[in-house]
Every structure is written in C-alpha cells, then in structure tokens.
Length: 233
Image (cartoon, rainbow, N blue to C red):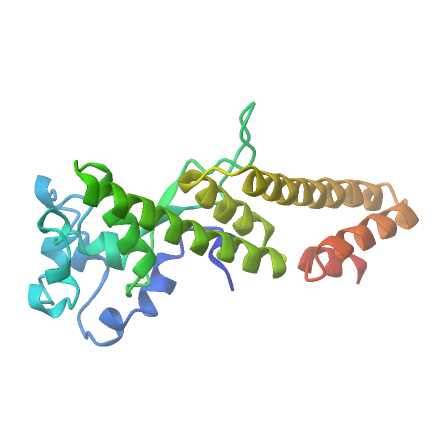
C-alpha cells in the first residue's frame, strides 16, 4: 500500500525493511527486538532501550545530551513512535471514526515530531515557569505540524488520514476552526462510503444508470478512488 491508512494488516515487516537498522544488519529479525520467551524488563517496556543497545551505543544518539534525563532512554518513543491505526475505526454516539488501536512505527528513523511529543508530556509533568512556557511552545509547534499535515492529506484525498491529523491538532489546541474542518472531512468520508455502498447495491439490482451516477459522484469527491474507477470500468 502507498499509505499506512490503507494497510489491511499491521504491515510491520514492510516498514522494517525500509529502516536503515534492518538494511545494515545481516542478522536482524523480529525476534531481535521481540523475544517471545523472555518477558521485557519493567523499566524497558515501551522504550525498547535494551533491544536498541544490542546494536547501538547510547552515545550514538546525537540528541541524547539535549534531552531531560528522565526520557533519554526512550529510544522507541523518538524512533518508532506510536500512532493511531486509523483504518481500524468505529463510531460512538459522539465521536466518528474513532481509532481504538495504536501501532508502533516500524520504519525506524528520526521523527522530530515524536521527540516533541515526548518532551511535551515531560514538561507537562513538571512545575515551574520554564516548563509552562515550553509546554505552550511545543503545543503551538505540534499544532502547526498537524494542521499542515491535515491539509496536505486532505488535498491528496486521504480523508481518513486527514481526520486523524485534524484530531491530533484539536487534541493539542482545541479551536472552532479545526473542529469545523474535522467535521467537513468526516462528512466527505461518510458520503464516500454511503455512495459506494448504494452504488454496489444498484449494480446488484441491475440499476446501472443509478449506479453510474453514484460512482461519478464518488469521483467528484475523490478522483483517485480506485474502487469507483474499477466499478465504472
């Protein structure tokens, strides 16, 4: 798949193969980091620190000395950040396209946004004016990132992914404008799913003119909708 939100499964091996850690190793496999016969150390859960140090030295991280001591060992948080598996979603009474499942990014790399998220969480737990100012700065920076990401995804007709990005921005700095954009994208995605379902039913009933109109409408909203193009063909 071209985008993570199109994955039908975790697809972790595909992303792992795109990592320099994997490409430069002759021995790295899944169980290099996930030993099914040994429970992780309590201090290592969610950080990956011990597994990372099997191949790397702590001094290899150029950012380590700049980070608060409490988060220096959170290798996974910065280099394999956890995100929403947005394609697995359901609706509550108040939240559409709610993604209850998270996944760790297995394309091991440098993710400045992930580092900022870790720093934000740490500063939020700290007293003092300096931390409050840093919280405000990081929230503003992350909000800008997610709004830009949302607009980019929306422009590429990646509406499910855009929903997640707008929601991330709203989590950081709730704003009416962001809420409005989120609702717009939610309605577009709902329309796409509804019209595709109706079109498939019309085809089954051999009401092809109606199916044609519905599929054409889908393509006005998402010109690269592969399933709609396929059915028209």
